[in-house]
Amino acid sequence: MKHFVPWLLALGPALAVERMVCYEEPGENLVSPPPHQTNATTAVPYAPTGAAYAHLTSTGATHKTRVIPVVRDGKTCPKYTEPAAEHGRECMFGAHTGSVPNGVSGKCCFHSGQHVFLYSVFDNSGTSPSDTEYILDGRPCCTDDTWGTAVTEHSHHNGSRQCQYGKHVLDVPSAEYLTSCCWDANASQFKVHLRGFEPVVTTSVAKEVSKQVLEWGPFRETVGLEVYEVRLFGYYLEVRGKLWASGVVDWSEQDTFYLPLERRWKVAKSWTPGTSATGHVGIDATSRLSEDRSVEVMLHVTGSGAILGNLDGMVGPLVVDDAKIKHALAWTPKSC
Image (cartoon, helix red, strand yellow):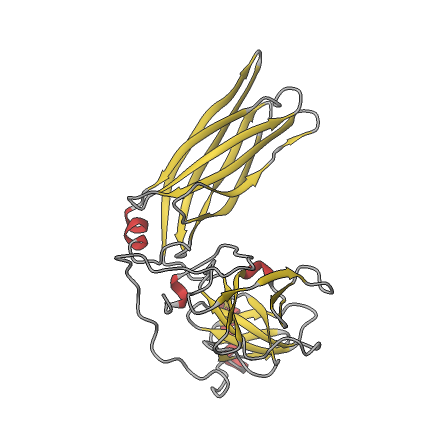
């Protein structure tokens, strides 16, 4: 399982020291990699200038795009990207623009498969190698020809991480996008997997589930989940919907959360609405991938406080069984 279309895949944390290997399963269908891509270090940056850029911005035809700092040399672009222009702290490539984060300087590079900018920055410490390969597939584990590395907090920069393999260290400035960090012993380089940004499938879903989880004297509590939209990124589903509670605690929240595509139940996200006066309702959204490629979502509900302290119940399942999602899941890689 060594080649995937970068836009086909996506995220899940894998911060492990030991070797982590994803094996191809029998009957797994893999898609061939894209055709030869431009050598990013020699290509000419493509961006609108002058009147052309003014026209795009005035008509709203530009696409606002993320800019993700990655450690390299600050002058050249990583593999799979093309040089892009920078003007007034904005990366530009065609109709795509993105704001450069504060505190960094370097080179704008555009990933055409994922429609995102990687921003090549120089590591002043000199400890990070400049030939790291950044793969925007969201893979939560390493391939069978690379080793999983340790991932630690960066001691000097809040919010950043460091990948460590023996004496080799790599800074990861945008740790929120990191899904796994791997070491290729044959090439003597890091291979860093970042989350994907282009879904395989996006589909509208009208599903909801709710249940009364508390009935104690005059006190009641009902918890529910509504799902509006699902996007498949290969290794996970991105779900847009609404969580709500009604009764002792009245609360609702529009949210986007991520369901890992694993056969075992796994917590996707947690919420704890409430106050010190009412107590809190703890809601854990858990999910698993079924044999028929549908995805089940259950809410585990607990409570705290004098009234809600004994609350412990389940809501669901809500089953995502959209035909387009199930068909696409037959062609995406299996979870690690």
